Amino acid sequence: MKFIFVLSMLCLASGAVVKAAEVLRPRGVPLSKASFYDPTRDFNCLDGSGTIPFAYVNDDYCDCQDGSDEPGTSACPNGFFYCTNVGHSPLNIPSSRVNDGVCDCCDASDEYASVSNCVDTCRELGRAAREEAAKQQEERLKGFQMRQSMIEEGRKRKKEAEVKMDELKKEREEAEAARNDKEEIKKLVEEPEKEALEKYNAIEQERKAKADAEQKAKEEAEAREAFAHLDNDGDGILTVAELQSRQTFDTNRDGEVTAEEAKFYLRQEETMDLETFLVSGWPMMRPTYKMDQRMFVPPTTEAPAEALTPPPVPGSEGKDEGDMEEDDGIEDYDLPEDDDVEDIPKEEEEEEIDQKYDEETQKLVDAANKAREDFDEADRRVRDLTRELRSLEETQEKDYGPEEEFRVMDGDCYEYTDREYTYRLCPFDKAVQKPKSGHGEIRLGQWGEWSGPEEDKYSRMKYTSGQTCWNGPARSADVHIYCGVETKLTGVSEPNRCEYLFEMTTPAVCTKPEDISGDEGTPHGHTEL
Image (cartoon, rainbow, N blue to C red):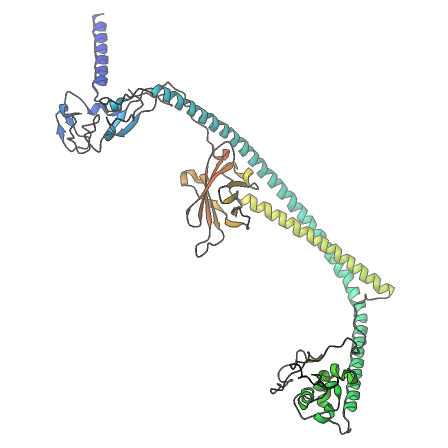
């Protein structure tokens, strides 16, 4: 019994020593560093810069280079004062704030020698902080639960896409087989159609060649007749004098055909033979010649109007400079307009007329047309299925997060509007900017990759290759993602030229919150005396 009594007394004594050590701890020292401040020994500066008597601690004179000897005064400019803040969160403040008349510690311990009338508000602040922490925890928990739903939906969509891809592959195989069958049928019916139409094509070409020859002969006959009419003396040569005898060639309507006017139609020569007339003279004269004598206008006493340029002559288009000589400075004239001028005779105008075939040939053509239509439809079906399958394959290749939690955001767009612009972010697609004035969109970037740090890869998105800035680089957008119960944009800025920063919240990044329950010391239940 005596041994037990002595042991009990030693334990009580030990407890008393611990309490005494805690009480004797210098002002401004955290419990974690109390062992360095033993009043029974000299004090060693925490940076090892020297040793001083313990009585020099908190004597309002800075002895240690690191200021560790003055944790409770403002003597050292580089020192720190520890606010215990029982009931709230502890805090370290620069020692220069001690006794400066401003309440920095909620327990008022930093103003122990001032007249600032600071009061202890730690329990009230701690209660408000715990309520806010509980609210944030509740929101984070809700976000985490929503994330689980996003994961479930993402995995469901991935599975549905896989099933759809299998279905599309099967459908495409069937469609390709049907297209091949249609193509074979098309080839089979096009061959007899081709043979049948070759007969009609040969007949049509022969008819066209005959019509062309007849037209050419008629035009040449017309030209020869005109040449004979203009060749007054019948010597086979047209001269300036012979054209001057034709009032039709009075292009400026002054009642006289000048030599210059006549030479214009002779291509600036004095004479023109029949061969030259047929090749180049007649195409130029023909419109004027057809007017003949109806263009006569009596001479006027007024000065002739400004010389005009003849209109383009049919048949002269496309001729190179070797075919047409220059005017040698001769004044050009415009031909007068006359609504009563006789139209230029032509052979029958070409018309697109539906080809008429015999009954048997028409059946072959109809069968071939039907086969071509069937093949085109089958081919479109294959191309449509291929396009849809490729789109799904591209979707499946995207990184929607380790648990497919971001997949549900693909296909949606989110907007944020500031004073000048409306920004739109379409995850896994693009980021754009649109002025409020409504003058089109500016592409800020296309989906690039996840760009978060290694330990938090899915906290950032990178959009690149946007429209190029004026005299600058291509635009790009960096998206920072935070936990929130709603997927939305919360802000957009341009920290660097042509580089945009989007801030976004979504449940997709909400992790399971830790337990924050505890006593009134701190939000996590830890109190340091």
